[in-house]
Image 1 (cartoon, rainbow, N blue to C red):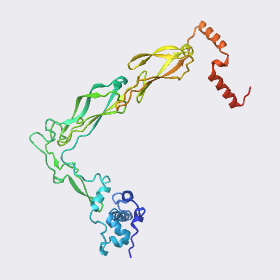
Image 2: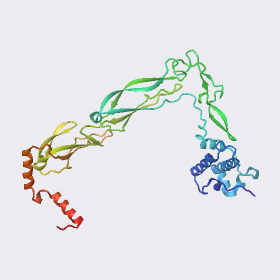
Image 3: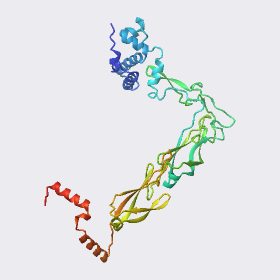
Image 4: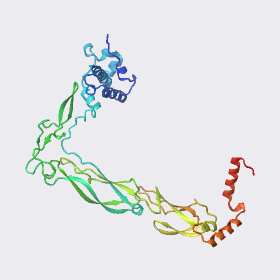
Length: 373
């Protein structure tokens, strides 16, 4: 009679657990009990073996079906089962689960490699972002070494087969009681090594460089928008293609306008006289000045919409509007005569009908405090 614990119990999952749940549970236990993390701990090593055996069965559909029907006997080779620990396909499972635990899944990196993508932040004024513009930028990058044509080897020589991995790009490493394939630490997966490096790039095949590019900025871009320049990133290694350059737009703050999608916002200060009596004043737009009519009795915070004076978004759609928020400005540094006039005005405005909002506010305050006086 088997003394082994139930495999589902070992991993701490339900019988109907998905493949992803099984894998996650095993990874957690493997990280905790792996012998390399618990040297000279026999109990941890036993738990690791137990979890690994459970995972090897439950991660295989056929073995799991046999285990669900017959228990441990269904996967015990000695009893005619589907095969136990170390069976076919387990190395693939092991490499998948432990790919980053052991520093990589061992995939060969030899041959041409695509260069890295680059990011460049371009600052634009609001006007240029709205209207569009062609801008020249200078970008630091890695370019293919012209001296060695990107090989990294001194002119007249060439890379030779790596003596550590014999050109395979991988080496077999012992991890506890498992053998794991890793990227060759000497040639970094290329399968070749440079015995006589190029004096210009020091064997890297690429050199630090910078280049000037002309970027066409479409009208309507906003902060965070990206412009992709294909093939303008870092040069690839071993003759591989260059990466891409992503130009990220950053719109500088404007002295007057704030942008909100397709609309623009601005504050328009007006005098207390214009707010009271009404009037007409000029307000700025990105296309020039326009007249704005202020009706009599305008209050602070009143929004006026100037249609079609906003932004046409880069991704299409109708043009936005300019929203002008009126701010009534209190006069300062009054002379004696001005103060006298305002005192006369205050006396003449004692009638509550001139300040309906203030009257309603004070009535509400009285109700709040229970003051009926």
